[in-house]
Length: 307
Image 1 (cartoon, helix red, strand yellow):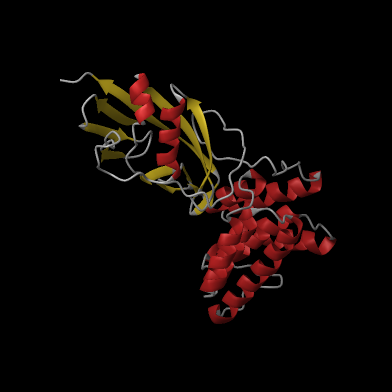
Image 2 (cartoon, rainbow, N blue to C red):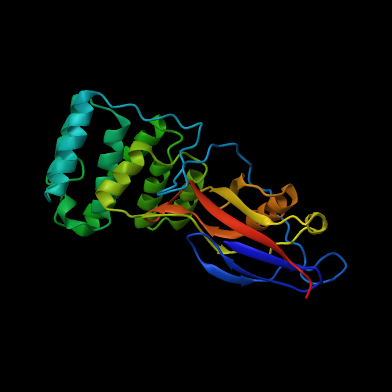
């Protein structure tokens, strides 16, 4: 929580602790006419949104309102997904890959199958030996120099087909970026990652990422923030109290929405919002993959009698 103390004379000081993240030492800007630190102006480059924050506790990843919910796949597809996950968990992931390839050959063309199989080929192309298939279009040749481009090529083909069906799914772009990176195409990898930043995160595709790569979840956090300005009009009114905000961060760590949760005074809320719009953040992540997420922060403004 950020605490901003204002005495009736120009001297002021504060100590900042950002909820659930880091602790910083800060000073409050002096009253008008007292000189001191410049006002920090918020960047408004990112398009501002109007989303609904989730409850404040636990993992606060966000599914954009425009993103459709994943409906259950047809029973035969769900069965294939379950069998492949079970085989992978038992250390027989390459057998699961063969099962999915056979399903594709039979005409099962569901995008979740493409994502699972594409990710497994990617992991094989990154060097996971238990995922080298003995059958199929990228079967093990015994020569890694031949295997790697075949595995990554198959991964790219499958994920591109998934992307054609799930055009707003960031997971597909992130996986395609991994394919490009593993193949040494760094410029392409960066472009694909950036393309995914404004797309939907969460849902079944990110469950697939977590399950097969055993990824942890990491909440968003503040990395640095400026000093809050105690507004002169709030001082004149004797206004004080704690402002609590919910900040929506996109995968690029840009502030896309500020929601006031506790507002003791409009001027104080505006001052707090200005500081946190201009702050620096790390986005929420699933493993290395950035996702949309909320962060709750608080700022306390307190007046003290002149000594």
